[in-house]
Picture: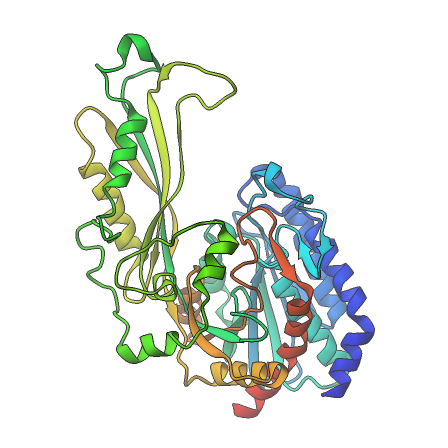
Length: 455
């Protein structure tokens, strides 16, 4: 619709500056020192929703960081779309690897560099501006609700209770999420599923204190060495996970599904060049897209122990630590896999150390039916603005609340992300293409139009 385009073109510079204001707030949910920043960011999200035309916006406190809820109800009898997003971001460290300040958005070659630019401030803000366009052009024909939380990056520990306690408030006909990626604007795609997550921390203890490595080395087991050996044993020579029972519940992809995934273009040499690596790695017998979408994985996310400061200190440490996560696929359960990980790490530990393994957080995998009204509306919307039918693909990341929303609200989720896998999510120099940001704002009103017409 021309009115939508005209309004966006007239206001696009303001849209961008408003996003920059959000990005300047270091809303890092994982760090207690950013508690005030989290509250400041929630207040700004509330203001922007009201400015965009929401009738009611409230900030709901939780035992952690607050949730922002807003709504624009034009007629309770009309279809309702619940937009989910999150205003919290990952820690920016290591800061020395950023080329620009992580909380001072900088545009370079048409890309917005800042922590949260793509994950997820830039993407959820597309929906806020889409609401404004629909309201200002008097073309909103459905109800829109917003649930923007502040704890997604730490596993959404308090969202479940909020959803369970506010089912009527959140009642809708579908959940629309832009916290995912597409292949590119030239080759559009829609995620039809995300992997689940089980995340644990392992503590290995040897002697009761740090020891002189010359006096005790060779006689006392080094916890770092033992932990490294334990971690190395988790994959075999085919990069297959060795934990007994790990694959028991995996829903295997059919030949037809694998053929459909193969339609997504993939340039292996460009992929390797972008990452600065010479060879790829992964479970034998599967393509790169399959390894990152339909197969479960086990990754070491961090390992530390001993002396890591400047200079040398010949110490045999008392303790070593690791953070380990498993990405899960349909039919796997996060609590079951987490318990399996914990028990396995305890079981394989030799007698010369003790192991303590604890759960951080988890979430269930999710699949979107291709025949759902929400998916069909999203596909048609993307086709309208990008000129091609989007390819359905499986996303490798996790959004822990997806299965929760379906369970508690009884509705399906559709993913309509405009980020790219190469946007450095969770890494230094996170970015979001301005072209993708604007194209998302242009496309989302069509989703609401088509979803309403199809219902």
